[in-house]
Length: 91
Image (cartoon, rainbow, N blue to C red):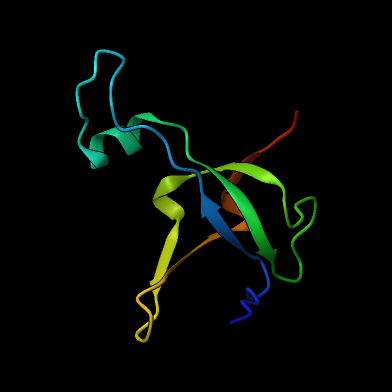
């Protein structure tokens, strides 16, 4: 399946992070997501998106992330608007 985001949208793969504290305690997913910066790898960009390309790593506003699940495979797809990207991550 090929995903082609609509103009102004970005298809992303959110980075995973360890939900344990340094002392080994498990942290509730909702709480940990609010405290961690949300980063992702860009999988595809829609038309009208400037300065962001496939393969870029970004920080984005978690509250603006859209999650879509397919009926057939239950696969999750994540999208953000280009305007909700806070920064590009470079080496």
